[in-house]
View (spheres, rainbow, N blue to C red):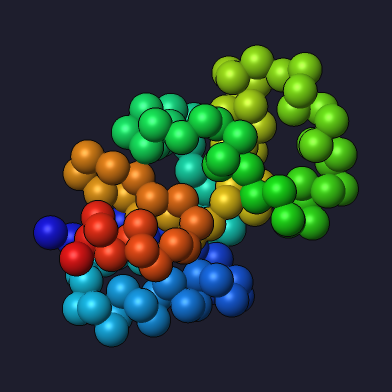
Length: 118
């Protein structure tokens, strides 16, 4: 199966994840999250498939997250408002992401990736 690998090429964690995918001969299509931000519909589908809480999809260490003061603002936002916000800029979204048929992996945790992808 070929997976969708969503990353930001300059991100060190994304580079590490890509290297791991290549070393494990896992086929994927790469998508640059900065050039091709996730849509609201994609985000809704990923949240449903992943079973992660929506806050897990925010790139809390990113500059944009900090500039917008989202740590406090997210507390008062509905899930729909959070999804709409995430869809405005790919740099708000935690990465890397691997989209599988029945699962979504967010962030690179080698053990988790190995259990799902290998």
